[in-house]
Length: 564
Image (cartoon, rainbow, N blue to C red):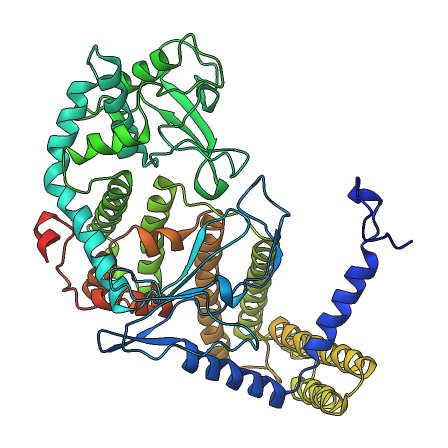
């Protein structure tokens, strides 16, 4: 039954979406039937669009533009349990768009027939090139310069230099809030406790949210009594543990049990126990929905922070703590006795371990995807196969050394060359079908043939892997000994790879690399330890942080670099 236009759907469970799913799957299969020539032509079209819209001349310099493609209309998703999830994003018309360009520049022609730009401005103070308002949250969206532009580079450098300035101020700031933690004035005590939490636990400031307009995410100032669970394991006695559980930025769950009685929070007069007592008193005789820090707000906290240093904010604390933690952790590993014997791959693992500690400090999480789980399972199976193959090789070497059962030594069963040729022919046949396909039915058939050919190639790869340890004929002792050595290296490398992937599957290492850790620390570390920068920074990051690539091997994140 097809519902009318004015029909109001009350229960989506009673709707049959199968025809839509079937149609979308068919379209997906049809799109896959694209030929190499069509793929090349599409790439050429994208490049032409990039050369036309992807660059701007700013102060006489050619700069790359970031997002020059307009978002298409569709369903709004939002982060986490967003109250406006499912609302429809409407198409943006040229009349809604304002351009920002110099007075002497020619106004770009609107490429949509019958339409014109809404406004043209000449504002040299703004870095944006175009702006419009989206219909869901009524917020302004901007087209700006790309992350690797000189403007963004100067902004990043300034951000990290400001955080480095905190190196010389942090002792005085900590001395101040430790003194105020004992204050009898409620507002002063709450401000000091909030600064301690921001400094030591790397929480964001947080602000009031209209939960009808946006998701109920929380920061330091907006913590409620329900977010703090004292003595979560019911140990009693002088237990000083608090489990913090709330949704942070982008609806990422923050769930950590903090032992305020631990040495790390109390050594060198860290005042962890006092902070625990303060938080307990702030929560006493309050409802679960009441705010913990009821005497202060984000504006008061930010003004309080600015008394210590111009431009100081919670983000500066996070950048400082992230950069400082990375530098200290890397220095610790470099001081170990085994460091000199490590190869580049092992050093990268140690770098990622330090990066992971920063990500945990800043609560940079990610959900584990099905693809990640499948990849880990696949790697685990491959590792087991390699270990079994190594055992077979040891038995072969034993048989060769003793001279017994030599005739029973296994050799390759499958003709790999023949299987590879068959798979290649299947791919060629599928390619011809794609080129000939005109109708949707022919395209679907061509895609199916292509998928079957690809599966055949994967099967050949699997067969090659399963008998990779064997030879066409009985090998010599030297050949087997050499292959055992190769297999030892392969097993060690795969074990390292699996451990790295498993350790980092729920932690987002990229967020802290992009936004919080001074890239000069990484560049200097790579130069000091002869690790190729590509091993830790992707091409995108190398382009974004090209200003940091000149950092010397002995460079350090400290107060001296604040004025660079």
